[in-house]
Image (cartoon, rainbow, N blue to C red; front, side, top):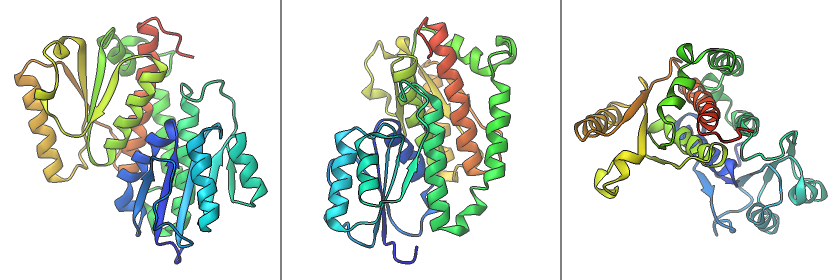
Amino acid sequence: PSKVRHIFFCGTGFSSQIGKILASFSPLLFDVPFEIIDSFRLPKYADKNSLLIISSFLGKDLQSNSVYQEAIAKKCPTIVITSGGKIRDLALENHTPLIVLEDKSLNPQTDSSSIFAIIGAVLGILTRLSPSSNQYFHSPSLVQTLEKTVDQYRREIDTVDNPAKTLAQKHKGLGVIFMGSAHLYGVGQTASHFLLHSSKTYSTSISQLDLTSFPVDFKNQNQFILLNSNLYPKQTQEIFDNAKEKLLSQKYRLTVIKPDAAEIANQALETLVFLVFFSYYLSIVNQINPS
């Protein structure tokens, strides 16, 4: 760890969104710059003191394979997370540290288990690099949050007692606009990506609100979901509150979600699990196969 001067994260599909969750955790996780690679090339300054984490669930995409082969040429230490594909074979061939995920899904873009498997794998790596960050990412506490949240929104619970089902009914036939900040910004990005692929619902995520950028009919076709937190910095909370008041004053439809957990990582996990359930039930409401 003492030799690492930069951390680069290259991900495709869900992994690219998960990189944004990790970036939002950066004040807790990293003592060095953390950068998301969204092209086919590493930065010119990547070298033997840069750690590259590549996450590609299927391991077949051109981007991750291109970045990986450039990392080999630059002698950049690399860790690969995948379930298989060409990048797994290359990692074995080059004796690159490798985390192999179980591939139980025919479509990882609509299987939420792949999201949490990748998050767990990357957090496992990063907390080893920065042991002090374990105070914020306590594994038993995160597992407890995961189990508690799943238990609240499972299919057996009727709509009247299941907020995820209720929210899905409220958004029937509508697009979903997420707005989140700080440690929940990446959660909104990931949830938006999941809705697009899983429930086939138009969705996007924003960090700043500019109502002038939306067309007139936007108001009737979409609803906002605002991701709030009692852990937002004061200035962020003020921006969030102003955005809420602005939306209400202009008669936009919105729902505010605020996690119960007391820690940053637990709040992000709780919110993400809830929104995955919301997407699942929204698929059913919109008569889309949720599998």
